[in-house]
Length: 350
Image 1 (cartoon, rainbow, N blue to C red):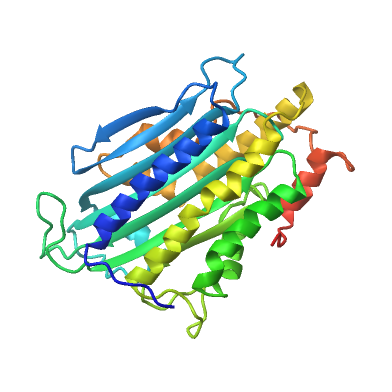
Image 2 (cartoon, one colour):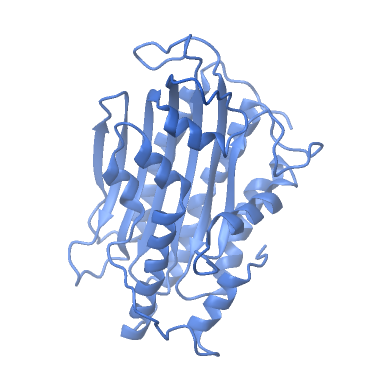
């Protein structure tokens, strides 16, 4: 593959991209439901270095008929010092990090990313999550300038991200559309990418204590850099340079609106009753369980100095439900049981 190089630092290019992507996603969601309140734009500054913008939607009341119940499309562009405890947690997932457990020093870091979660009101409309990020660790002996611009090549860098769909009621055409759009976005960048990252998504979003996936998956990837990757064959055609990997990440990010908004549009007016709403809230409880118990991004974010807790926990739904020994989903030949069987046995949809 051939991708033209850009002389600007990658941190600047990624920052510009996520700003643009955030605007296009929020605009698409607002256009879908023009009578609903607009997303609240909340610009913030991190005292330890950096800034971000949280675009958040919350229904004005329980009686609201808006298509969305709660949603957030957030970006953060931050830098500073990463403490040893956070570095230690990262090393387990990023083999490229040179880490000496006896070294008590913090490492300078830079991170830019977009993270979004959409919780629709209608039980037939699926929740969706997406996240695309770029991370640098700098040599502590070559500290960044006050503006956060790197004075030397990074000690280590990588991209990560993905998107996944979480329905309460399963519609095969929705799963095929979502997965098919992501597969098409991956295809020009190497045939090995989609199968590997789809399988990784199914593995990552497993709620271990329930024995089921959070949803019907999508793609998930991390630690993409020029170094060999544990999820991809050494001889696989794949993006390897920073420019090639960035082009792949942009393709995945640009695929979000066409992968999800058509699905949301055809489900938001589906009739539903209290039975369906109860099941939706139980499924949202599962969503909460995964995010607070297993999600690496949530745990890492809460460990980072100066963490903006409101933005990190934006992913949680406005309402959720837990029932002791609930019987919902246990009766065969019901839509609820059908979903559970799919969540326990992932399959290919594209």
